[in-house]
Image (cartoon, rainbow, N blue to C red; front, side, top):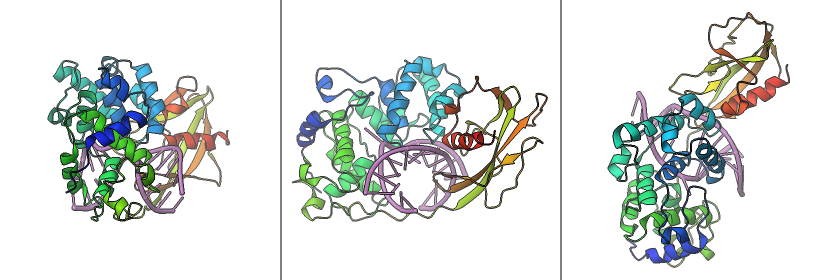
Length: 349
DNA sequence: AACTCGGGGAA
DNA sequence: TTCCCAGAGTT
């Protein structure tokens, strides 16, 4: 095992090349004793799960503007949080965010736990996030392995086992690499290195601070490692989305079930999404449609949707859903799929 | 262990 | 198109 990787090399690189982020205390401020807010670290880490920094930035700012403290967030309605989360995806994160905030107050006196095992019990906090919060917010020496660090370590040690099978091996190596000094900056340095230098495609080995220590670079395999198991192909499902507009400009919307796809989110009524869906509109009306359809890709299937539109009278009584006035709801509070549907449905009005 | 769960940017 | 992104929860 290559234990020659000196933390100081990486930390020196980080001191000069750290990315700036709204939730981060940079290396200079950190050295002068400024500590990051655990609330900010936690919120950013939840948002960053499988989500890019570029995407998260504006959502993070929106959230801390709306809920400046953990206490404010804990007192929010779930519908407010899901509305603000709309478009970010993986909506269980939004529901767990509120659950977690409430638990911090009911179980931990409103103060974030600092140790890994306690953090791991919180909803939405898994092995990565528990380690990241403990290391970054509290400067604890914890093992942190995200997608960036997986790639960096895979190349440093030229691991030939494909991901995700090599996950345990990588975690054990990471355990040996984590330093006693500045563990929080160390993990952020590894992630920044993976994001800006040790990139998935065309890694910039010539400017890498670990060039001399990296086995893959030495053997010219940096652009091949890590190997990955093939992902299975996504099937295609079809369905209908129904946009109902009442004469007073109100729209028919439904709160989706708390579990499952787009769980807890507000959206237009839909049919089932399957290979051969039935066209089952939520109300009887004169339905308009077009030949064009929406294509939208979820994590594990493609969706092809036909959008239908209807105007209905004031006395319309749908079996499900509620009418919300146009001024009372915000298109941006809907998941992306439903925003797309609205844009197509708008043409039918 | 395998499956579920979003959406966007880059190549 | 495919891959990847500061992964976690459920079955």
